[in-house]
Length: 279
Figure (tube, helix red, strand yellow):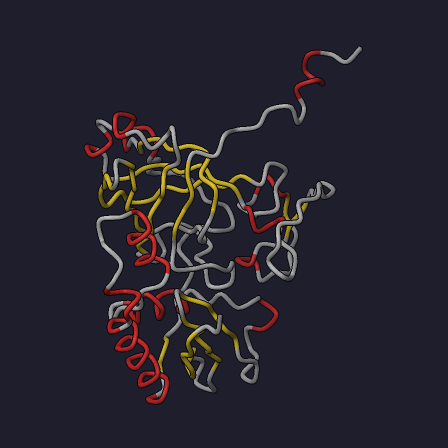
């Protein structure tokens, strides 16, 4: 007969209390750590956890902790959910170490961990109640769209901020690269912004609905998005072994557009194309 501890292995399932709604639908381009890019997103709470009473007092906190699930670990090449229990990986290759040096998985913040759980502190911009449901507007998240949310707690500075903590192989924020944009790519972007703002499906959506708020976050391209796109690319999402490749063109999907960029001879990342996503 199994012991009490053994019977508990794999026996507990935390409920999903909400979903992260964001401009980024793919892992490529997402910040590798929270608060590197001031990316605005929304957490859509699910019933019964969307009760406004559950958030009374939260407005007094500037930041919150989010526990979440690396759901794309279980996606196949066609973005279909294909969850299979993979074998335990005791070591990983962090991008911060060039993608070649191995360290223990528990000494990293890799997504490939036994629980596939992530933990992020983000800025709480505001709490909206729409159609009687709670939407948390946050910034600085390192989660992609449709990320399942497991728990939310307030960030408490006196205990959560350790002023003299030692951060191992990541003692400081990564160096950001210069990002430029071709004239043609800028024209493409502005043309898509204009079309998006004039589209009938945007003007017909009422902004006082949950669906409208999520649509804005996920799809509506704004002029201010250019600064966010450049900030995301400046974090250099390219794999480490491609860092010196000036021929390879990379594509980052942001909201309703695919943004192509490449490394120039002057070591800048240059945006070369901005095209609408074909449905």
